[in-house]
Length: 116
Length: 118
Image (cartoon, rainbow over the protein chains, first blue to last red):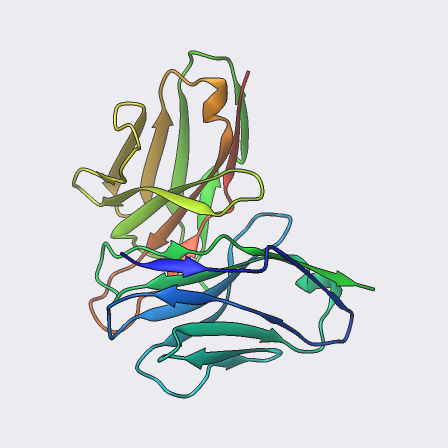
């Protein structure tokens, strides 16, 4: 079974500062995908970033980057130059190879507050 | 990215009645759709996976007869909560995936439906 653990239920960061959200996972799969999703107060799930396990290079999307440590099964999200609009719940998620019925396994989430 | 809509966005019903929630993929054909339930300040819990034209696969602990899922077309899946009770009050989210068989296929989420059972 796949499990995803987010050990930080709540975090806060000053506007313009950098914050790192932690995520660890457990799997016996060798090929898989990892994700960070953002859920703002509107509750619409928004994909922040995706990492393919067979790629050694860490994914980046503008101010968002990940630190993917496959051997340690760690997948942290770094948000640089934090903005007020980054305030949201952040969910780390795991997915086995993209066969039609394969599902997300979500962590319990980290509530991030950006302080002006 | 592709768009997934849900209707209604918010519904209030009386205990004992049934409620239908629609999930539509607006600009792609969704061969697979997923239904999630989310309680306040908690994560998304997968309820069931449905493939177009076949019966849904329910997660352990989810009552098939209570949460009826129909995926009759490539753009529409419905979740019907039958004989709703206050404990069914929750936020229900659908997601849809277009399976092309090549590489990674993005999964898109709907905006969710808030169900309140009085």
